[in-house]
Length: 309
Ligand code: ATP
Image (tube, rainbow, N blue to C red):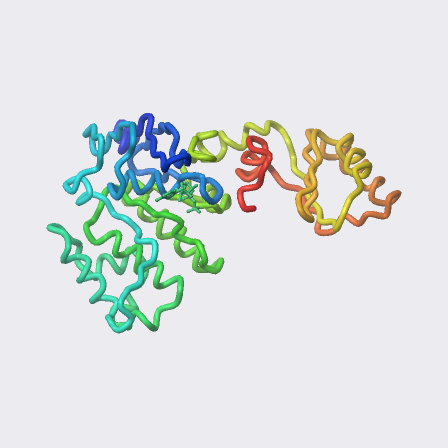
């Protein structure tokens, strides 16, 4: 139990400004060992800048980083040896074999895992002798994660590891990340997919305009919405009066593009009123769904915006 509570990283007052842009504006958080810590936020929130500072690619303007029990102003080469970083565009040489790519990256480190072990961790054993150019998008991304694991790092940075992957490939990546955590690795993940943050994270910090606007476990964060249930449906357009009427049935009602979202603490009552409203005004409740609040709703509650514009 003691070990579980051990901290892998503590970040205090981290800042990075690019002229007028406060890319990272004084953020602080702590990451327990053997956990998945996720930074969730829209484009431009400062996620990549934060990761690049923690990976030692950029120096911060202010703040302190404590990692592997050491307090640092900047991440040094010796510290980097113990970290694994997913490269943003893996761009591996297409005429190399998978095992050759892993060997090449392993040669950069003093200590490296055997190729077979790396490929097993990312479920690519069967592709050991395949050429890079024959891999699918999901397999390429798994190879990129494998490359991040060659030095058997304790701390692994995954910056948007599933962006652009199809749902099946995304699920495969999720199970690799979960396995890494089960092996005792600490993972720092960024994503703008709230489903991913919910599925994988022990702790999430929601970032917006360089600051952390909320942090906690997915459950702690969604419990901010209390006992609410969310009702959603699609429509092409509502009048201001339609929307105002809808709002009177629940706690809030919001129209965002073609999606209408109603929050209620009394599902049955609100639904009855909505059905009558739909009949009277001849507004179909297309694709109506009823669900519990998720991290997207938390973001919406805090910012008035959706994660994905
Ligand atoms: P995305 O999901 O789009 O990658 P992000 O949350 O990772 O977004 P960052 O890439 O960290 O966000 O960018 C944060 C802010 O800092 C943005 O406004 C961005 O334009 C700005 N920024 C990032 N790098 C630089 C740079 N080298 N010079 C100037 N501004 C920068």
